Amino acid sequence: MPEYKKKKLTCACVCINVWNMEIMYTKKQLEIANQLVGAMDSKFFKSLSEPVRVDIMRFLLLNGQSDIATIAENMPQDRSVISRHLTLMQDVGILTGRKEGRHMVYMLNAEHFLDRFRTLTSLLETCVKECGPLCCK
Image 1 (cartoon, rainbow, N blue to C red):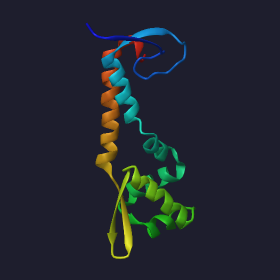
Image 2 (image 1 turned 90 degrees about the vertical axis):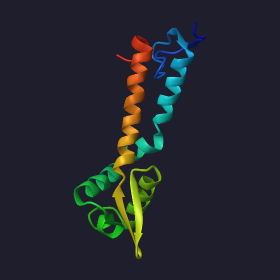
Image 3 (image 1 turned 90 degrees about the horizontal axis):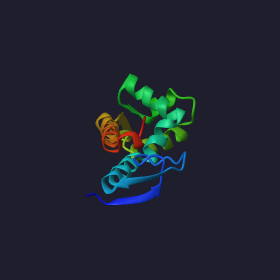
């Protein structure tokens, strides 16, 4: 028999408190919820929500790997602003960079990017299967 805990939650998986329903959830459901929340790395998703970073991603998708000078030439922002965005994007794994002489060349880290979304999708699918109607509709 699974252990049950009682807590005020609207959704055992995503933990959105809308109606303050009293529900029971299992240890496994709590584990799934924690994994799901852990996969929703705010720095990663925040970096995707900034319009300048989206423009940088679009540029790299269309033009391939590029150095900061080339990227900055094609953006309205100063080079220093572009540099900060590139650093943040590299820190969260959206971009990779390598030194070529005195220049840093940036490219999309497609595999890491896709892995993040695969993980999130997989956890959401597990959440829906395990939590059923308590989770999402």
